Image (cartoon, rainbow over all chains, first blue to last red):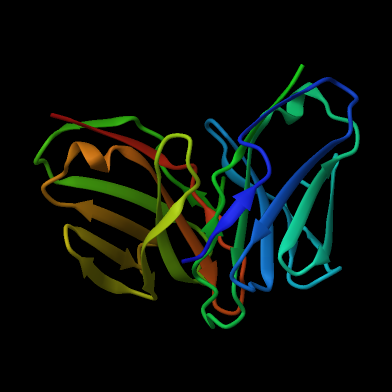
Length: 115
Length: 111
């Protein structure tokens, strides 16, 4: 059973703080993703990684960076948190072995509030 | 115009009703079409997927793709209160690992 875990369910940070969101998957998946989900806007891709130390920008990378030092772990970093980064953050993973790449497995999400 | 359009709802129906959820899209390169279900305070989970055009049935759920109209649907028969969730459509071209998601439709099935 695929499991994607995220380090926190709820997080409250102050403006200007550096924030780390951690994601770990246990299925040896090559691909990992970070999304944010906002009411009325749906899921928007922040960054994508298809291998260790590899990363690609998604639709809204500004204000974020990522790190993938190990295959199972993908971190999202907010260098200087701002109130407009208050959102639900979802991590997902998928496998190269699934040729269609159709299925993404999502974590439970981290609801981040920046005050 | 977004690549994938989905009415956010909410859609409120009585228990036992047939539910129709829909998405339209503009990118003719999309070949894989998925429906995810997201319960409150949880991550999305894959419900159904279809490759290219046609229908696919799984229990009470039927996914339908009409590529000529760029329109996909998810039908839920005999809807139950446990079906209350947000349903997200997603689609992607062949050879890509990155789907494009709709905004999601909130469904409420009341007893």
